[in-house]
Image: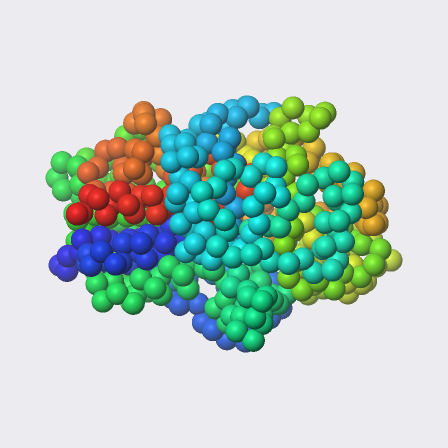
Length: 516
Ligand SMILES: Cc1cc2nc3c(=O)[nH]c(=O)nc-3n(C[C@H](O)[C@H](O)[C@H](O)COP(=O)(O)OP(=O)(O)OC[C@H]3O[C@@H](n4cnc5c(N)ncnc54)[C@H](O)[C@@H]3O)c2cc1C
Ligand code: SF4
């Protein structure tokens, strides 16, 4: 059996980032990815292919708590979900690392402070070439360095929205964007600033995803090997169950095994829990590292609402994701609990509506889909959902994922929507036509929209209430680590990828010290 210093399972935000960080060490590293390279083809930028035909949604069947099958919005490729993500690369707020009281209960503290993660946020912003502007967002946490690249400029309609919001007393800011756009030198810019970014793969590899800026740079080192189409089906341990000895892989219809001194799991929150639960043994009868019965629990994915506002004038914006608003992040004058983050989502197009629920059109019967799309300004509202032990991943008898989820913090979500509606009503919009949209949720079952999945293997100081210790090593094993969003004890209300990347770099430094 071939043996490695480190085996990393999964190549997304967590795994891809770690691979690049460890690669220069010269250690023998194996990357195992169940998906293939995402093909570079004209369909990358086809709205019909991506939003109607679901070309890049991986065929997988999960079940909800009532046993109903659904297709989750997952993407099994080198680079994981970041191949399709919107690359809004936010830091959690400093306060998110402490305990926060919400309308529905407590968002628990992380076992590390913001200050401990801050240097790694800075490094992650550098590695993922984040564009932004410090000092505009009043909730912004302290940072030890400026953004490595200037903020992406607003196009005229979004600049007008920003000006209108400011005039109304709000604090809109330039959103942190992971796109390789050089506005000072367009002929040399990798990014061409197009409308096919959020939810699409980038045909010209200008999106800061984990394939382009994690896996590919890692593979420049001869000590790193990547196996694609390699699904890890279980982790095997020594007799005492104190260390993982090897990983079992299904590839090309046959089974392979690889030994690793250190094994790092980064399959995404649901699949990481699945892999640990599938790896039950005599020493770990409830699943690997699951003596606490915490594996799979505390699943979160944000209370998100995609909202489409119809502007009186046409909105010809191409790249719309440049503006954010955190004025309600921690509450408002008349609501003492946190409400969440408001940002822009990719500009809607008529074909996207056809891939979604036709119900919306009834709300604006005199508007054709094309006219709606031309006038639409698209917002994404995120409220924090709270970790609940009953919101969890389990497996059915055949080893399929069962995702049981009951909404938390619904009142805060409702209140955030009401505030956005009230603001927009005072701006140059058609207030009666502010309608919900399900850009990432074409399925009737809400849990299918699992883009921001997190929790399931949280890290903490207490082995009774967490799966991983502060270094994200399993409490019960000497050499098993997890570095994806499953480690999150709480999810905050901003997008999760940069935090997963930063934490992966933090754990990476721990591993480099361990292996030195
Ligand atoms: C459409 C969309 C838009 C998004 N927009 C944003 C955004 O703007 N900003 C943001 O911060 N976040 C965004 N996200 C979320 C972000 O992409 C995820 O939070 C992030 O990628 C999670 O990283 P991860 O390492 O936990 O998992 P992933 O990135 O999903 O990586 C997991 C990897 O593990 C592989 N894998 C799974 N099981 C196995 C197995 N058994 N064996 C081998 N390999 C396995 C998968 O194929 C995948 O490559 C978006 C997501 C989607 C889908
Ligand atoms: S906006 Fe830039 S990064 Fe995004 S898909 Fe277009 S070219 Fe790629």
